[in-house]
Image (cartoon, rainbow, N blue to C red):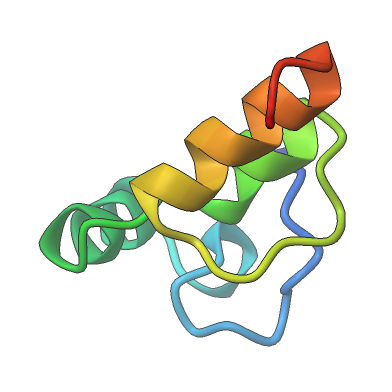
Length: 69
């Protein structure tokens, strides 16, 4: 079965295509650094963003909904 990951950063050593541990390594890294995985941003269509923080993701969601001030 092909992995469903939509992350385009395939050169990242944590990308599921580069090992046999699925999303676990990426998720663990993001939890440790208090960041959102790229796949979350990709799933809402947020291409341009200042970073990967929880706040950056919240802003991206609000921007897409037209609620960001």
